[in-house]
Length: 93
Image 1 (spheres, helix red, strand yellow):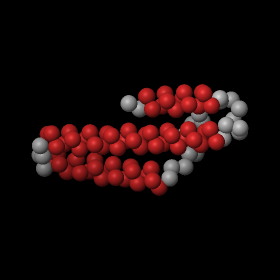
Image 2 (cartoon, helix red, strand yellow):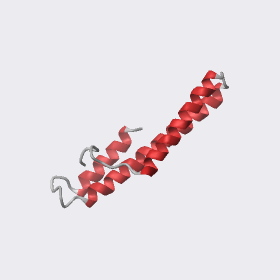
Image 3 (cartoon, one colour):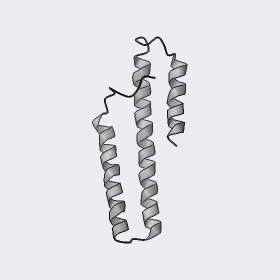
Image 4 (cartoon, one colour):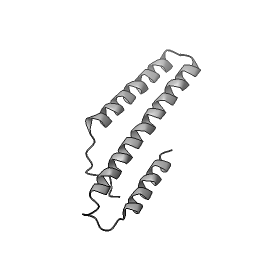
């Protein structure tokens, strides 16, 4: 799989990250207000899940892009591309 440099990230992915950014700012506000630990952890967990889903979207988008361009890059087989995508997902956990 080619490096992610030069990959275009669509507005849907950017909006996901903006929502996560809002969640993180909300968590910081909760901490400043000395909110309940359980509530803070719940929100942190939700943010982590949102990040994991975003990673999945980016990897799958990149995988599709790589497979579509396979004819241009004879150095990688479809199997190698899929294997690398899975490794990226596993590494992100």
